[in-house]
Image (cartoon, rainbow, N blue to C red; front, side, top):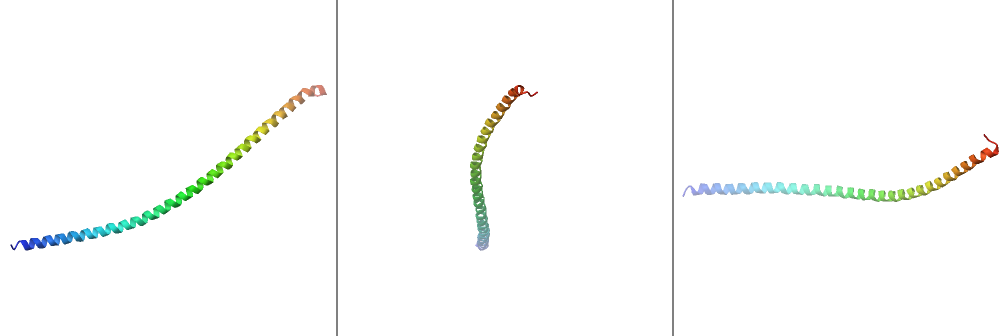
Length: 106
């Protein structure tokens, strides 16, 4: 019966030590969780700001794309007018070259 008391004391000390270790580790994990949550919140805020910037850039790109499409259409019309004018100049040159021999040139 005398061996029961030391064994009981060792068991109680082991249980208390185990509880202390569990509590200390639990507190450490809780602190890390809180720190991670704060870091996570900061990172989510950064991601949110980056998403807003991306949205701004995309809307500007869409506006630029619309302006570019308009400019390309104006360029196409100007090019068509230029082609017509160049054809008229070629016709005038051809007519002039045909008339020059009759005017006494060359």
